Image 1 (cartoon, rainbow, N blue to C red):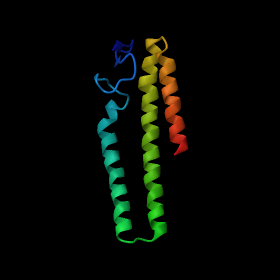
Image 2: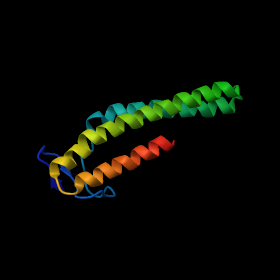
Image 3: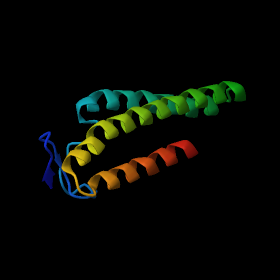
Image 4: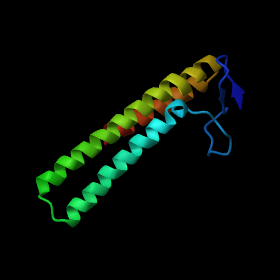
Length: 114
């Protein structure tokens, strides 16, 4: 584990969760969990709509809303990753910045494919 100039701790490489690391979303964790519970409710609503034989277009409208909610959440999480994790790697120097930028680029690619 390394300490950046900003005082944040970051692992020297991506870990499987064995080390405790403060992630970029940490300060917004409660808000994120609340948002994810709301999205979970939307998904349960979709299940209920199918179970109740709701009209197809109405279900598709709800699918679209749920998809947009997840995309919005992902975008906010990505922004927090860039501001925290990538910025900390830049301050730490070495090849950490390249690794974090590559990691973020791959994540963006996955988001664009969905």
